[in-house]
Length: 104
Image (cartoon, rainbow, N blue to C red; front, side, top):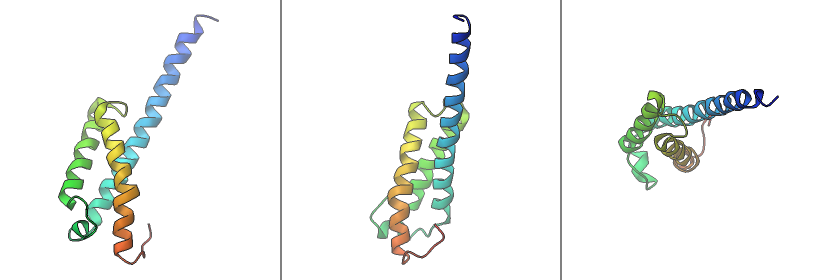
């Protein structure tokens, strides 16, 4: 019984890391795709970074997360934070700028 505990812990840590990696890549990917599809003149209108700045931040963080640094590295955590800030703040501002009509 005492021998099985470390094996179970390593498997559990692997599964949690995999779930966090999928979550990080999903948030960063959705944010990056949304940033690509928006008009570049809308970003300064809502008072945020320009379109190129958001694309650079999100793309670099996603690339570093994919290259093996993982979701719990400093780059992965910055990427999750940047993606969530984009989705929860910038995307809503862009949607409100375009009369709130859109599929998301």
